[in-house]
Image (cartoon, rainbow, N blue to C red; front, side, top):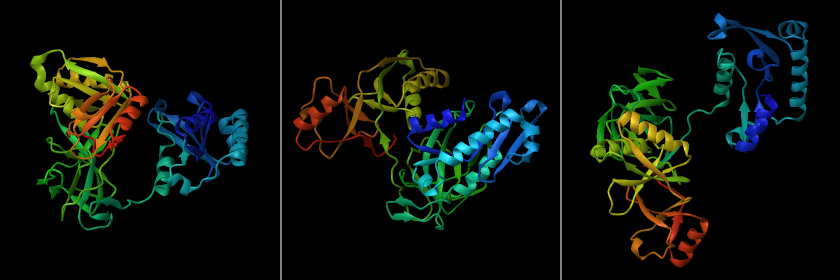
Amino acid sequence: RDPFDLLDEIEKELGINTYPMNWPIGAGKEFKGVYSRSEKEVLTFTPVQGGQKEVLASTATLGSDVLTAQIGQGLHATLQESIELLDGSGEELDMSQVAGGKLSPVFFGSALTNFGVEPFLKHFLEMTSPPLPRQADVGTVDPFSENFTAFIFKIQANMNKAHRDRIAFARICSGKFTRGMEVSHTQGGKKIKLSQPTGLMAGERETIDEAYAGDIIGLFDPGIFSIGDTVCTGPAISFAPIPTFAPEQFAKITQKDTMKRKQFVKGIEQIAQEGAIQIFREPNAGMEEITVGAVGVLQFEVLEYRLKNEYGVDIRLERLPYQHLRWLTGKDIDLSKLSLTSDTKKIMDMKDNLLLLFINSWSIEWALSHNKGLQLTEFGNTNF
């Protein structure tokens, strides 16, 4: 596709301006290289071994006869016009805008030939910030603090189907991690030994012996971690929780074979702990029939596929008409005394927090206007 069209799509769909750090020469099979705007030189390549793994790179200057010989007169002229247009009417590279999420650097390259990846990583290291302080219940945690601290931001079950393992991904916020160290799990209130730390890159794993603030490590999870949990040495602390945003798609889930209830509950809970879905049940009810919330419809398909292939459970999935989910804030809330529209559904999450499901925004306004002091929020404090 035309690179200008791609930039325009990013700006329209994501609402963020772009700044091309380099510019492609050709596209698809005619891709010849990129022009680096900061270094003002062209990096071209010649595929090796069919262009699948290696390239021979060379540099040339824009406007030179050498570059014309390498890429041809037509592509050279197009490149010159594009760069002139970018320099004349494009965004300026303002790192304060990048840090504020209002501007995004853009890099072009070829994943197939691995061309352009190294320059991208080089610029990324120059642009990115060092590990920043993080807010906890005891105040701000300095990344250079001696005490080791980390928080769990992702959980993935069955990464190795042969071992039915669960990996909790932790971002180190301060201190030094060493293999086998004993830490406090704040939310669990226990001491645990981190004896199987893992570094992951694509499909490869390796055991790591040490890591530092800013690094991400994989921890073996026997089922004790949840997203947002804190592990640390020294005095127990707790990092600010990760907000749980309200899903927009809902479905009723039941199992086809009631004899597989154990596998069904285990699968649903583990997938929910990963943050892919949110599960809810009616007050004082069990897990025989649950409501699942997701951001997009595709997540329902993923849920159905994973339950069948990883846990051997077939489910019935019935889409529900609800569009809005709200957490109830405050203490001593009596759901039975709330005045609600007939189509509003009362539910609880897996932390026993009370919630309401609404079909439309009018029902939300009804609930707020007919229940004095009722407070509703669009997000909760934990992911599970």
